[in-house]
Length: 169
Image (cartoon, rainbow, N blue to C red):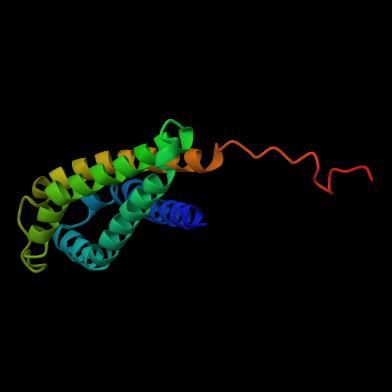
């Protein structure tokens, strides 16, 4: 029961943060360079205020649910379930590392910029964020796919031949 709860929350949280990263990468990333510098700064600051609160909850929650799942699966450490849950959990760790090392410092700098007088080279300053964002999105999608596979590729229980539902009587 506890394993099912942990796996549910890991899948839900990984799915949510992967969806946010993927949606931003596919939908917003191509538009950002087209914005005037002031509009870019305003948009990104507002986005950061929202995602800056949500992403840590999703990332930490998915990591903790993954660790709990792995602890509960540890006796079957050679199973596909354990291996692909491990891959998904490691992908979350890599996303967290990239986010902390690259995206968070750039976001912190972004929050100091004035909308009325943005840096002249705003997109050059932002470019490392976009590069890291692309990498972490690919990693997140791979982790989500691994977790989805782990949740759907479990061996099915064989029906009990003595079950009343299978009995001809």
